[in-house]
Image (cartoon, rainbow, N blue to C red; front, side, top):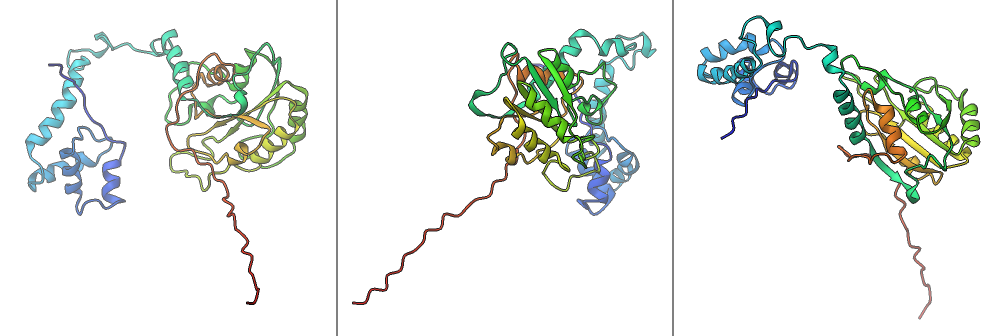
Length: 320
């Protein structure tokens, strides 16, 4: 029989949230008891430390319930050597950046990014692009040369970044235009240069989407459309493009891309999420066929207007 040693920890302050904000229980002691009896071993926050003792005294939970949670937690700590003396003298006591940024770990970051990219549309098998046929590519969009945007939030310090522009440039010659100064895309002053770039190159890759200024914890989006004038930029560049147009969406949640799906000039659509430090390499690898894209992890909205086919009823006023 194989034993699995693990403990379950809450999202930070979540026990307090379901009492204070969601009113799941009548008292804080009931909230603490319910969490522990449901299998929670460690609270990321002060709630259990404050209210568990009173929950035991009120008979809502037993000391044995608490001991089981502690056993799960302490067992893992023992396996990590946390009770074996000086931490720095133990197996994991001197882990540092050199252990994080190993070639194997950086390759894992790249593979995770590759598997996280999803092909939403591929008209006429436009992808993958061939570097021997497509010699020049216009790389356009507010997320086309970003770095920190790719790691989202709740992230550590990256070992290094490869932006989409840098990744694509490893395959072909590129012409870069931002199109928008940021994802808010409040003006069209840069649209003309982007249109010219797409007209003069063999293919166009638009890297659009969101960043933490649009969506983040405590910052909810109020709509599903691309921000500002991004949609107009995509449509204008696609209309001007000489060759195939690939739209890459970088975002944490779904975006309504029905306009692009219905645009015959846009031949492929990719969703890249926030792909991490190696995101640019992964995006390029998918576009140029070095690797296959992954699978979608949530429903991607595509709103289309349904037209009712109303049959005209011909009335006959023939008299008998």
